[in-house]
Length: 188
Image (cartoon, rainbow, N blue to C red; front, side):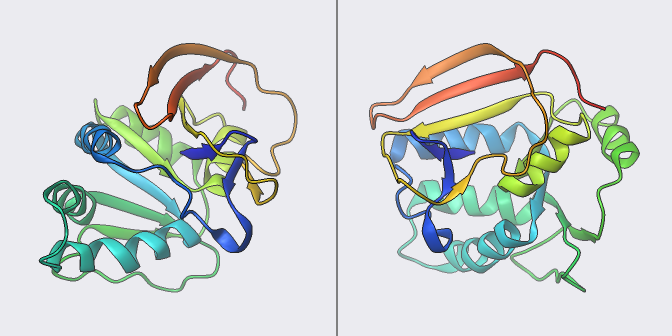
């Protein structure tokens, strides 16, 4: 998840235009998507992705990297967790998407055991829920060199302390810094 230096997942009015995205970042995103078996989205992140990537895949002005990102997202398995959405729709450029109204920790654990690839989580509120259920094995934060001053905090609503162990870092030429953490103690 991309965050600002002061810990915001998104700016006011859900603004993410401040994300530093360049060729190096896109190459990283492609490698992450190739390692991901399933991506879980909350409603807002899902709607953002669903409104952008299927169109990007068909737009002749889309860069080669973005076309590959679009292909990987559009064809990848997607699970949407939302209490408000009633349906999600598959189409030619948006395949393998299912809707769940609640997080079932046992289902997530079963999915984790059925694949040797990653399960990605898109969205701050969903990530908070995964942390609270003890389902997050690794937290990857792409810290962008910007201070927003206000917005939606990362892991908003997390109750209690979560100790983390830094397992790797990566510096990007844009000034982004990837910080990868593993929870020291799983929550239950």
